[in-house]
Length: 58
Image (cartoon, rainbow, N blue to C red; front, side, top):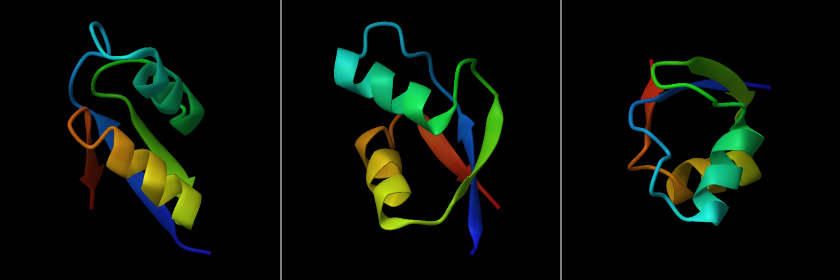
């Protein structure tokens, strides 16, 4: 299956707890960290939830 690379671009400080947990579920812990996740509908939903904190890297 295809994968998506995601980079955290903003701090999670001040974000609601559900968004912090979403970043943790995606495997993101630090700013500028890049992780690769499988391209599934659930992963896309998590990315959409924290779209203002992350960017998709091509």
